[in-house]
Length: 161
Image (cartoon, rainbow, N blue to C red):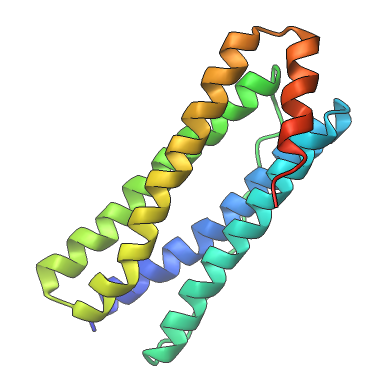
């Protein structure tokens, strides 16, 4: 396995942790705005991103590479409203998708079946992540800031398990 591929996965492992940090800021925003369902939902995102990073850590260790953790950047904490939060989350997920696709492309170019097999799960996961945020944005746009609609959606998001 090439150092280039291993380094790319290590970078993505760190970016997954950065993603958790970004979602934590979104969770805090929602909680500060007293939308407990949204806060719960973003908290679930935090845990997912940490799990994604842990899977990468384990893979790197299994192939004999020592993962290197890097300093995380302070997350964005400036949001206009819940729609803005969701739009920023979607933009972030699109960046994750781009990075995952770069790893997949490099693995194909090198013919590294281990990485091709490993990264496929992340490719599929990103389809789900982007779809989820697209749907959330559509719902928030339809609600158009109406508090009745926001609280109904908040109640629904509170049930994410």
